[in-house]
Amino acid sequence: MEHPMKANEMSAHHVKGYLLRGVDGQLFFRIYDPLDRSRYKDYYIDHHDLEVIINDNYSSLFEYDKKKKEEEGMDGYISYPSRLTNRRKNVLPQSAQDDQGSKPADTP
Image (cartoon, rainbow, N blue to C red; front, side, top):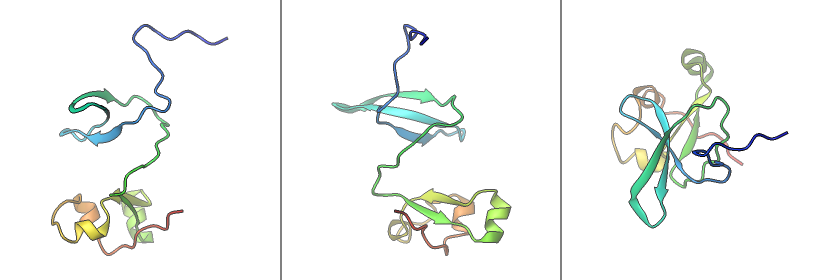
């Protein structure tokens, strides 16, 4: 039996928004008003397995080499495409700057 939603609850299924990192390093989810992007709502993420689809032409996946994977505990990072970052300095976190020689991941 399904439980009814609370009065302050709405389904997030198919809601378009953005993952952002606050000044404290905390990730949060932002939904912009489609008619006025200066208006938005921010939501803390209290979810352990949230499915996300990247729909952004200005993002690339970069794979770490084996040593860097072991050091970082991650397989790589998501950042701006190298065609953009090569023209701009210091847009990447230090760990990503150290690995700028990596090739982008093959994406389907």
